Length: 335
Image 1: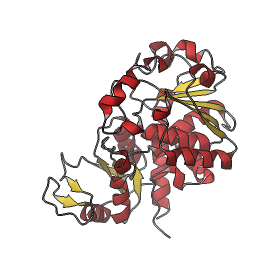
Image 2: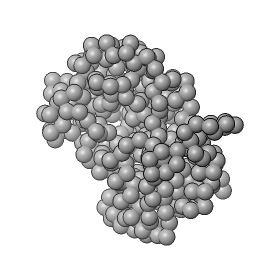
Image 3: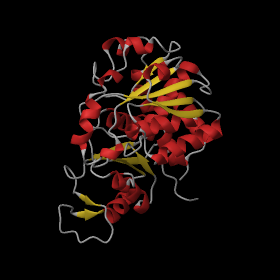
Image 4: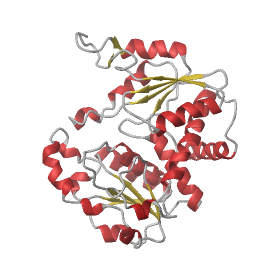
């Protein structure tokens, strides 16, 4: 059997996604198990984390496993990822050795590595996690790079808990203001999972510059076609919110401005009114609101929205623990 990784949900069929969500729901009802008994996972964080680190460490513990947390460049040697390079810079060891050595020690490797935000043509290659997958001889899990598949599953589980079948539900993925340009990972992932679940998805953003990478738009179109949903882009707030069942908010930087963020800032600053507030939510079909967290209150969404019964952001965050157990248990079981 070939080695199976969890790098993106686009590599998984709808049936496989449904099976992971069913297992996650089972873990939520009965949190403890022995699926990882005697097993270990290395968690490599190239970027900060709170929910991801906590939920993965606890998830491994709940299933009888052990997690090792590493921060390359801080408590572990800096790593070189480029092939055929003369290593005369900061990096002390190459991914070819790192991944193979860790594979001798642990049963799973999980990686969190954000893009550099300088050149999207480089960042979209997702070189760090792909290099781990290339050289590792154990399954590799994406803890967020240019997609965030674990967040996708937690989001989908929270929505299924609220609605049951998601097919045909109106889903709005809305851009929101943030004082800094942010990763498109969660937006990419929200688009993937919402279309894979057969929802009618509207990507709401201020201008065409904020439309997501063509690869993820194409995946979304493909998913929608295969699962009975739809995908469209809107720049009209009222039209997008009208009748929505789900509003999912995220900030992200405009791809054409990668490496030129000073030119993007005036556009971003002109659209602070994309904040999710009570007036916009009143246009929905008694819709729910969510966000991956962390969220800057009264920047991305108002206090009233965050504190309302319609907000399922904390439910989604809790579900990270359960879906990640499902992913780890599934990958161990397939070995």
